[in-house]
Length: 560
Image 1 (tube, one colour):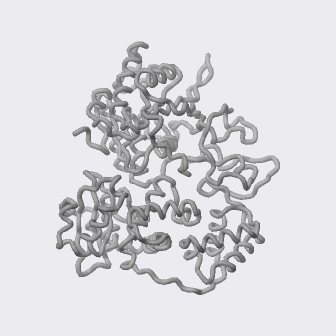
Image 2 (tube, rainbow, N blue to C red):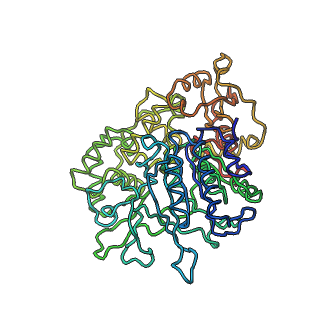
Image 3 (cartoon, rainbow, N blue to C red):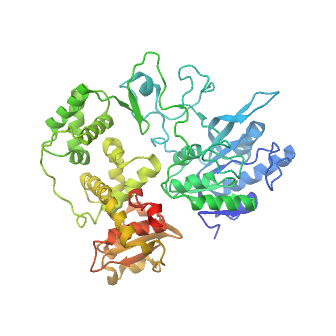
């Protein structure tokens, strides 16, 4: 049966890894003891060199056994044994090293008769160099290039670039931005004792942003992430926030207790602690070439009066009476608007121009043209609005994108459409995007309903789950709210006018083949369907599902 997922298990790492189902894990992150005499509460960090290397080979072999053929193994290790463990992993265990990353940090160990320790080695191993997860286009992983940050070069790749290898100086000592985050020497401050994110019970706590980069690039939502040295619980906390399944192994009973307390306060979709860019949002230049700011890791040019006039003119020339929302939700209309901005020679790109359009509308300085759009009711969107919500949540978890970020970026909007289409094929990009806007618009009302009319559902016993096969019964041709489950993991809380029809459509969608839903909890709202949206919001708060948008979760303070 293996170990229960989404739990931290106490035990020796080698013995406990042997209980993990072979070939079941997508990503392993390991930060083992360095054998440098650190004072753990139960582990002896003063082994002989031979004993330490034999033990390291044993637990890494167990990691290899637990990983899928397409799995990835990240190893954090100090100078003393970095070379030996790299060779063991490659030569004895068959791993391929794809990258040797240096984590550079401040608040390192001060030395009197040697250079101060200020880095850790991060080895990126894979089992099969021809088949492994590496989400290189994930904008939450990519960093801005010098062309984007400094030179305002229109030839710059708008996606930025991946971190790569270089030598660096200490960032606070480097002249004029001599340190940049565009290298595979990564700079994140060590989690020192005075830091807000410090848990306090473990001295070797990894920054959440560092684990976030590794988990985002080497796994996908609902993949299984394992940490055989759970320590302070950061790997499990970040995996949960990013919508992954997780397993933690830990020798210390006290650490296990503290980790469980920490994880109980973490929700799927929570922001990662610490700054995503720990150095600065953009480097300075002596020439002062650019004016602007960063938004979602992208450079946004200053919107001056002349540029605003160009955006308004482009809108009037291409909108054909449609609203800003209709332009962003309609790929053809948005392409015309973007092309007009380009022909006018406006600074920026499609993302920037669309953002400016929203900004001008928000300021109330966009002319009203007045052509109304065909209204889409909630009943009309019942067949596909769930697909829009799940697509929104997936892009939020992995890319940290808001809905505006998705709609303003043509590339992100197409990816959003593709995810929604996998879930509910047969509808247009406009319908998927408009449904997402409708969900965002109505979310405050639904949260309010949950807090005022459905408060008992925050704590009351839920109906018994039934297998999906039983939903084919005609008795389930009725409206209601349902909770879709995979084992003990809640995947999605939805509402529908016809549960039987929804489940039948869902089972043939390619998307769900990756997540293997097994059962459903159903609450009928027959005869009174409209308040079901408030009930759904209450159940989202109750079960913390993976695929529901954060927009629909009532605030914890209001729910108590």
